[in-house]
Length: 157
Image: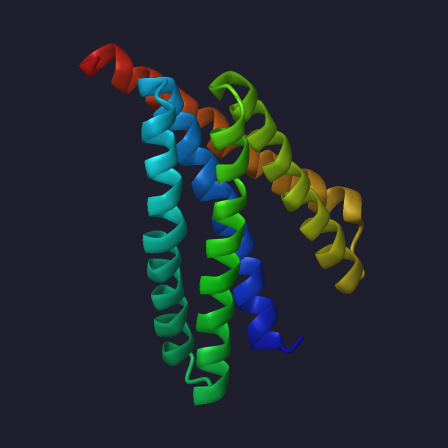
């Protein structure tokens, strides 16, 4: 895998996990509706994947990358974000919402941890430090999103 593809994959994976989990947590806390969470995941999977890919495309153009590298980063960002976000749909469709949310959080944290270990080993870093840093960030987003969802329910529900 070349550098532009790795860059797009890493960005798409992180964004796919963090954005989808944040959305799931906020929507579930505010509505408790499986229908709304499914609609949110599908929106994130397609629209936000396109948005992130476009953002990566512009970023790579700004860095004056070669045309082929720009499109490799763009494509790998889109595919990674789309596929990762869609994996969160399965537990929501098949399980009760309270269980699906827990499974989604566990799945997302596992994906972040695995990618962090791979990244740390590739860069010859202490994998424990990298995993801890990345998981703490993910957990912060999860907790903040849940809190925002609760506030929306209280203020507007």
